[in-house]
Image (cartoon, rainbow, N blue to C red; front, top):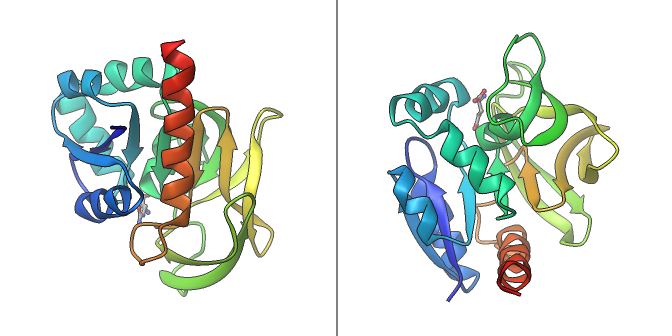
Length: 196
Ligand code: GLN
């Protein structure tokens, strides 16, 4: 069985577990860094990136999360999770995990658009994906190794860099599990590759 962890320090955790299980993998909530050894892939959920970072430091997760990614195991960051993955954040001196070569802008859609839904084409996933945005960031710039998977009004809202995947929206809040299923497939492929 492929096991996918959802970082359970803060944010939309249970919804991701439900989506992982609907996509044919086992989902577990990660609250201690030792649990990272038990999983094949990890989801960093939406929530509040500054709060999440505080808790990552409090529970001594930072290096363990970086090493998890650097070992080749897939990570999917959604919304605040996307911010955690970026190596640069507009207006901030320091980023967090710095695993994806991209610059992100927090709360990028402004006050009028605190939350909204939009139908998106997500490359390799769906051409009619109903995406839920909540105080969402977007990606301002990507490095050459990053593949853009979706845009909304010219802003990058989903991307992939090798075994890292991110979305500015919340794929776990509807019954459309196709993006989570895409990540589950990434994890299954990497599990085979890492075992051989
Ligand atoms: N605006 C939040 C942040 O900066 C992200 C919002 C979300 O995850 N829904 O962390």
